[in-house]
Image 1 (cartoon, rainbow, N blue to C red):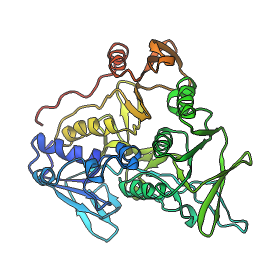
Image 2: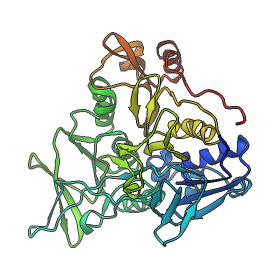
Image 3: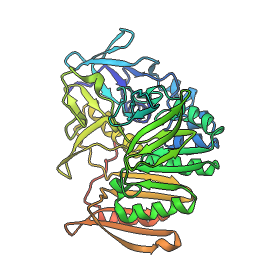
Length: 424
């Protein structure tokens, strides 16, 4: 295979930027373009729901690289231009302004778009939340703004979202977070640290139950309630209430009305693939790729948007975490330049809430049996393993990062991590 002379990366957040850097490190000297819908320099997302939202970090601290480092990359950054179409056959991307960018190889790194509560106007001032909304967008661009025009209703995906929400929270008293997953729990923890009255509502019966199961979810629930968060779990958000164009509350399917000066909708996200309809690529839960993260000849996907075949597990995965964005980028870059390497990671994610750092390796699931192997939950430090069918499928550390890593190496060693790259 002849290495491509020109490469276009659509999406310049962590996955896209890491791919560009890996391409340069491993010998690509040709034209390199990064197209992104956001005007900002590339920034990190995990701090948005924590340090940026809390105000302990200025936005510049979340930037992934300095201006000098980006200039040294020798790449052309096309910012503030949203990709709206791809022709996989000709490897050409059309932007919202009508601009057409062509390259010998294209890497899709468009990430996720937040799901929002759409709402519909009604005579009694309520806004229905029976369906989901979220305009498909590039990595880093918001999927929606304002839930049917009610001020004070937010999603958190990008930097501008975090800054807008922070400004609102400084003048608010009561916050309702809709969503019991990682993002919802982190926002609730940050808001409590800011002194707000916080209620967290969600369909699940425990926090992070879909990711970590009921045992860990119950411990997280206790962590939050001990810090003053009110939990309303196991009930759907039925509607939002408003007055004079501003949100005033959240009504649950149980009939309970939760008063609110601000509402954050954190009910999940979806891969930003709408712009790829008609591209010739296979789209499902993301851009469907082979074990090499290749979606078509000369077209690859990386990061949150990539649904790849995991050679070691014999199944398709799509991983939404920061670590995956960086690790997958190394393999994608090598394969774009002519290597033939499968991507076989041990999935990993972390979350910081209050004084607790959770780290999970592998594929923990709500169906697994969980057992504590070290430490004690009552002491606020422990490690646990997840078993399904007699096999260890995941490990978790609660303020025990070293022990979690040891457990991963001992228990999940058969899952090959990405190999070190040599020049392609």
